[in-house]
Length: 298
Ligand code: GUN
Image (cartoon, rainbow, N blue to C red; front, side):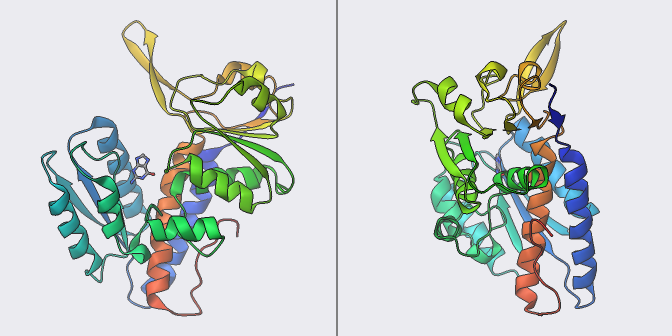
């Protein structure tokens, strides 16, 4: 058996199209969704992520406000910038690219963002709403994973889901989204015992560990759905590098029913969901019943 490959690029393109349509509807009310993007320091990977985000925002008709700051920026400077963005009416969404330099208190910076403008869903209010099952802005990567899962398997209720990784950005919100979809959820992490045995029981595996090919295909339950969040650059020999996921794709594709590739799986969904969150923040600010929020599955 060979798994079907979940096409994240195609799914993200469909979502971006819906975002662009909603942007056009907002234009009738003279609202242009605006996203403020804050990048501190020179981390090369963060620079690439941020330029992809702003490029795709512009393509969808979302205005972006770029704030590129030196690595020496203090927590107080950042909090002051966030307060300014909170009060700027043409900014509907605010994103602070993580990780921040070590000397910055990231939690206090994120706490300064007005929860209504929290495009990443990292503010404690949005985290709390997600846990309570209330309407919340949901972090982009796990939201993208959920959309891909639902498109692949509309009936998630009762399935056993294993989330590998417990980060605030992916693992924890992913577990809560799966719980809300009525899955039976296990969270595994670096101290988990016998990960292969847990994998062998899971109908859904979401791997967000940050270690190349850490999940072996022969651990999987035959017919599992596999969502690979990893983006790991490895040495490919002859001075070249390549990007691989947290799952060993070659062996997993023999056992899974469906699997996301890396690249071309979860990655494109993250940015599309960021655009959706930004447009939804603009829709909320308009308070016009004829322009509803975009929902993940409609
Ligand atoms: N760093 C890694 N992933 C993310 C993300 O989804 N949002 C932000 N702001 N920073 C990140």
